[in-house]
Image (cartoon, rainbow, N blue to C red; front, top):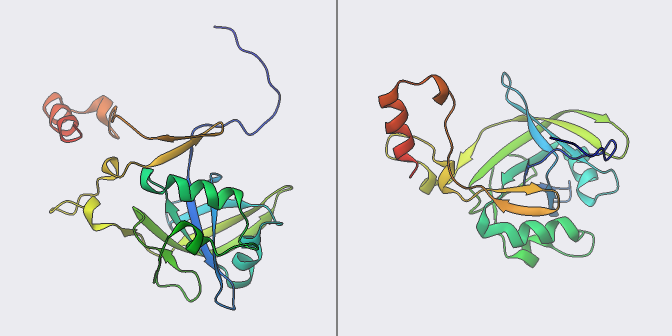
Length: 198
């Protein structure tokens, strides 16, 4: 197989699509779409987000030290896109996309109701990198929408219709191909687990 070199760029795909909610000290809330985010530590549970200093949400996150992350699903892909191309300086994005705030347990940043997950975070550090500032946030708790939890407490994100971002396209995650450890699982375990995802 031959490859074409395209130079040093940010071509790591797919990426998670998240809506980040935050608020300033004055209580004014905003939403921003991010794809540059990920888990960076287990103990304590931490995420990273990268935000341009020119973004309206940047100063809110700096001033309050809080934000909430919400992995986006198919039902919210239009809101996801609008919140990535419009600025909160010019509009109330919650109102523009018809999303409702919810209490996520932080002093300032609200959660977004009806999203599959809400991860309220407190900023532990900010590292200027160049075009973006990297924020490290400690996850305070995880809120999971009830319809994604079975009667035994199992979480079924495969039912959520989560969306990924791949080179300018939003794509819904699809067929389950395996689970962690499936390559070494006993045959009966493998068949039983895989059947549960169909």
